[in-house]
Length: 223
Ligand SMILES: [Mg+2]
View 1 (tube, rainbow, N blue to C red):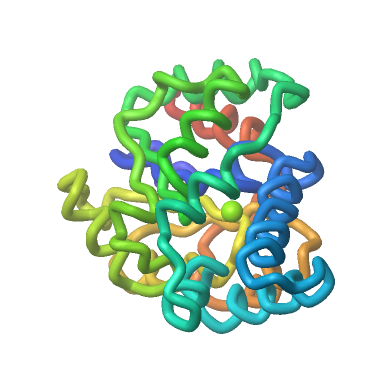
View 2 (view 1 turned 120 degrees about the vertical axis):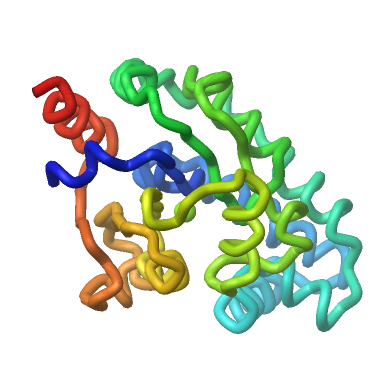
């Protein structure tokens, strides 16, 4: 754990990482994806959900599948699915305080859009605390876990992967981070898809609460 006080670049996934997966934020996005598919292709919501999940598992994101198989305009999709009301999501003062104490560089690395990143971080009260964000458009719509967006992230922010850590709720998204030399940290959760690779050797740390984890490192750094 002490080695983490040497980390110079903190990279955070957004959804179900910077806020708990117990909240219903992502299920709002999920529902919007189903209605997008349903409206666009004139199928009922059950069929739409099936297509959505099929593409998610096969292509990494539903959007990737829609682009490849159905020629969907990615910007239209992103605008639609991220237009969600999350005004009920409480501020996370604990997370805010611990992020402020990290004086090293902090980035968000998401398969969502910049609009979504801004919406969520504002609502949590942690906007303005990051040095940058990398979204699905920065990755030319190629999502994690494909290696390309990781390489582009490193390039965009000129990070040294050997001094970086990625924190993620989807275990498999840590594999390429590790291959590129980063430390990896999995946020434990019970989502079957997110935990299915949780016992893989490319995971360095497993945590169950992000602000408490950051607090531990912040305390260690003081000594
Ligand atoms: Mg996530």
